[in-house]
Length: 216
Image (tube, rainbow, N blue to C red; front, top):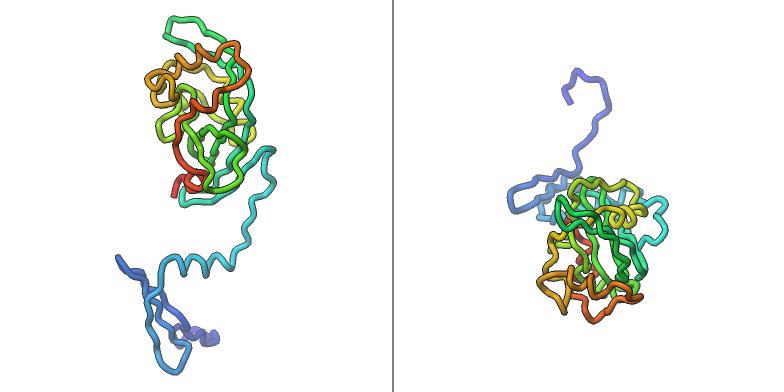
């Protein structure tokens, strides 16, 4: 500070210099100036220690809350059940309403981005538990839902029902079924009138831990 400013001296103790490939910490607090290299993760952890973080109230059926560089996200679980889905097979075609048994589903919902959906054989309990491609139309190979004209609510607990309330189209139906790898619609036709989804038909995708880090 310039001498004309009448404030108490505030000695410099530490300085961080962020280079393209390195972060250098300069320590002025001792009798000699010391310089050492630190990782960006160390800096982040030190600063995070000064923060109070909490998820707030989680919606019913929530599996996890995480925060990534793209924001926070909540995963919501829906048990295996029979869903009523609507399918429009062409722009001039009427809606077909189908009652389909589907496996347990994990919806990963983040503020500001379209949700992801994955299938599971059972309630996930460990990060290395497998997740599978959801056996439905209108979901990209990554698991991200293709929203079309649909908008999803900010409340994660309402996302699964909104997803199934929308009208599906015969789009993105490949790679979702062991029996019918080229068209999940053929699987849907075979499931009509059934009460349980054949879990051996699920196609492996990723692990729970990978889904927890979506957006990193």
